[in-house]
Picture 1 (spheres, rainbow, N blue to C red):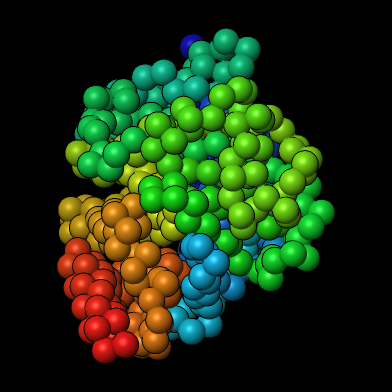
Picture 2 (cartoon, rainbow, N blue to C red; picture 1 turned 180 degrees about the horizontal axis):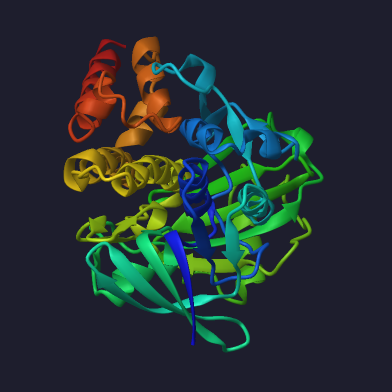
Length: 416
């Protein structure tokens, strides 16, 4: 069996893996990526957030991505029963990037992977990790390629950015259930011939279909639009037939969609994703760190996936460099607590969304511009800015605000 050597082994060639690999590689260390899939490959998470632009910039990816002329995204629009709440990132509370992109992930991820390869990082595609043995921080990873050939990789450290594959958590039985309920998504890409019926395409649109069920509309610069329904599995059970018949029936039942997407061409048979929420006991160990969806994937509603993936890898990559230089890293305080700040903030917003708390806030009359800007910053991915009260007090702030709005509106109705 052949044995190869590297300073850092990165598992996964998605945004988490490539950002981490680039940062470590730029510091002069040898990096190797192993990726189970062949690229390009389909994945959801197509609407980015401005905060991830900082990570893409530090990794050296922005020029390559800009060259592809993806659809620029300047905000997020929420729709319910004809009412519209439009958040524009240019009005956010936190100073930072005010725009990002909406991207077909197969193409976006391939650009990042191709760019990091040009930087000198070797990527082994269609290569699966079957075992890892740690000896302190050093490790020996056994992999098998598409031809069935087994080999080993010696590394001084491992960064696991394997996403839904969750390589290290599965190998070492670190997974645990998320506290979020199980949900399901049904989605496809469409040829969006009637896009002029909306005021898109420069932002994602999220439609409240009914309590606990929502729709994403993500236009791409190519004229293709990503369209998906998300909700409790019981909602989908009310629609008979195959996935195409189900999705077309759902579209017909939603006033905001039915004319624009009537008889629209689906570019692939609608796909199902469910029971995605997962987490793990810890994000690090002797010889490894977890980044991206390997740490925890919450829900697609606020497009947090790529942001948490790239920011976690941005932080972890720099810490791994310091580790290789000989500094003792306090992974609990320098990494896990920081990432949990972001994860927990997004979790509070996800839970408030499904509880209806955010409906009260988003669709209220006479909204306060400062509060809007602070909530907009969270929707832009700036979930580490604790000068923002709706980040610092994410567990209680939204419920207090919704209660104030409800009380105010009840007083108004009594005076009328």
